[in-house]
Amino acid sequence: MAIATFGAGCFWGVEETFRTTEGVLSTAVGYMGGSKENPTYQEVCTDKTGHAEVVQVEYDPTQVGYDALVDIFFDNHNPTELNRQGPDVGTQYRSVVFYEDDAQKEVAARKKDELTTSGRFKRDIVTLIEPVQTFWPAEEYHQQYLLKRGMTSCHI
Image (cartoon, rainbow, N blue to C red):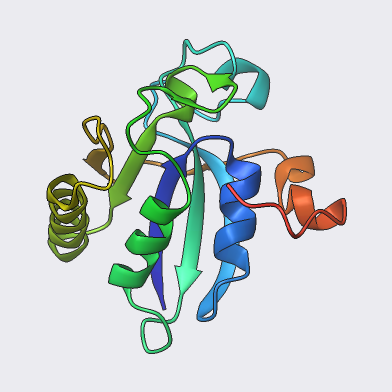
């Protein structure tokens, strides 16, 4: 099993997209990349802790590769939006890949470069690629939020 961590705006839709991906064993939403230990949702929403809302994906690399997960990440949000996705604004909504090792870093950087040169977007890709930090799970009511509410057809 392997772990991948992505921030692509509000974590509810991001989680649902990955949760329903073949080869993904589990997902958890939480916070990463900030300075405060064990932050709460209310603290992260102040945009003062430095955390991003993220989804941590546990996957079976024999069923789905990291390359494919990075493609899903880039295909399901706007990587040209700096510190926002749709109506959600703040650094907690930044586009970011947190890599576990050099192999993940290389894949994420390659995919970002490919997307940049593809011409798909008129603006610069602002996605950050950073080393993994402590994952702080979000409160239970955020876990599988859309599934619990019967909103499984939503996409990020």
